[in-house]
Image 1 (tube, helix red, strand yellow):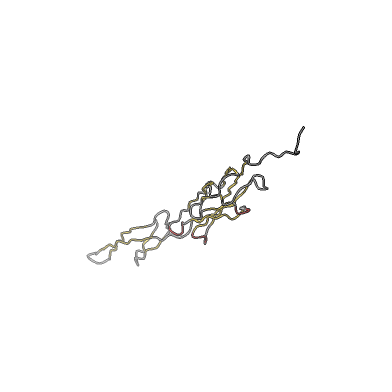
Image 2: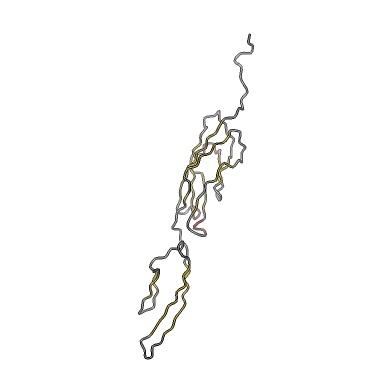
Length: 171
């Protein structure tokens, strides 16, 4: 059981509780004396459990793959990183951030929703055609547990370059 009552003192002792399993208890405590005649009484004890930050965020899946055209417009939403946290209230509030791989700040993430969007122009003809982002999800405003996910973004080419002739005249 979650509670024991000392039969001599009436003190209620907590054995094991978990807010995520049960957040409130109602106990009926009976007391009886050894008098003649014996008298008894009862009391209703309501116990409300306060949540602590004892569960880390869980990202599922932990790896995402996205293909995007180099012609995609700034602001285009690419994917949503999804995470859950077993805690409640502020302990379960999740905050998303990009902590690695965002060369040239080409991508942004909504800290509240985990939506990754394009924040800079892409160019397949440049040196980066694949971006590997590391996304961190913190709970309790980043003061406690965190979990990481990987987002691999592949940029694909569009025919945006005019043909180039080597000579001015051909015969």
